[in-house]
Length: 337
Ligand SMILES: Cc1cc2nc3c(=O)[nH]c(=O)nc-3n(C[C@H](O)[C@H](O)[C@H](O)COP(=O)(O)O)c2cc1C
Image (cartoon, rainbow, N blue to C red; front, side, top):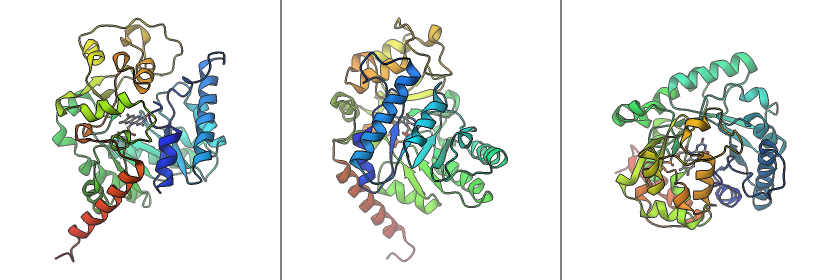
C-alpha cells in the first residue's frame, strides 16, 4: 500500500537489489476528478512506474495481489510500462503468464508451500508452456497477508521457513532448477547466509526497508515500527479473507473488540472483501496509516519488526546486509578456522 513506491523502489534498485512497487492504493494521491476506480488505479500505477524509471536505470518490479479485482489491468499497465518483473501472491497466480506475452518480463509467483509451488509450475507449463523465473517462498513470519490459516499460525514451530524452502527447492529442481527466493522474517546477513546455504538464490525483505529514510510511508508509520514491542505484533483477520500481521494500536483493538467503522465501499477493490461484514475498509485504513493517520488504520509488519531500532538510509541497510552476509558465509564456510 504505497509504502513501497517510487522513492524506496528506485533507492533499492540503485543499490543493486530489485525494488518492487506495491500496486494497491496507487489511485489515492490523484486529484478527485478522474473517473472510475480501475482507471484511476491504472493512472496511478503508470505514474509510479514513470517516477521510478526517472530515478533509476536499474531493473525494478511490481507486486500485484491476485485478490485485486483490477488484477488484469494492473498487470497490463505494468507490462506496457516495461517493468522487469512481476511478483504475484495473495492467492495462486495461475493465470499470470496468459496476461504477459513478453518473455523478458520475469514472473515470480509467491507461494507458502511446496504443494502450491507444484500446482503453479504444473499449471503454467501445461497451459502456457512457461515456468516461473523464480519462486518466492513466503513463510509464517512475513508481514502483511499470510498464506496460512490462523490455526496453522498458532504452531509456528511446524511452519519453519527453512523447512518450506527446502521442500520448494525439491519442486523447483523437478522443473529444472527454478531459483527460489526466501521471504518472511529475514532480518540480517546471518539469516540471508542461512537461506543461501540451504540452496535459496536470494531473499525478499520488507520490514527492514520500512525503517529507511527512503520508504515512502509517513514518519509516524516508520515510528510505529521503531516503537513496537514484540507483544504489540499481532495476527488479525483481514477483510482480504486472510490472516494479516500488523502492529496493534487503538484502531486494531477496536476492530478486535468487534467495533465496526461505517463505510460506503467506494470501489470493490478486493475479490474476497464483503463490505457488509468487513468491519472497516482495509484500503482506507492502509492509505490512512501510510499518510501517518495511525488512529484511522494500522501498519502491517513482519514478525521481526520489534527488532528495528532506528531509521537508516537504504545504502546503509544494503551495506550492512551485504557485509553481514559475506561475514556469515565466511564464518560458516567449511574451510574457516
Ligand atoms: C508494510 C508491508 C506491506 C506489504 N505489502 C505487500 C503487498 O502489497 N503484497 C505482497 O505480496 N506482500 C506484501 N508484503 C509482504 C512482503 O512482500 C514480504 O514478503 C514479507 O513481509 C517479507 O518478510 P519481512 O517483512 O519479515 O522482511 C508486505 C509486507 C509489509 C511489511
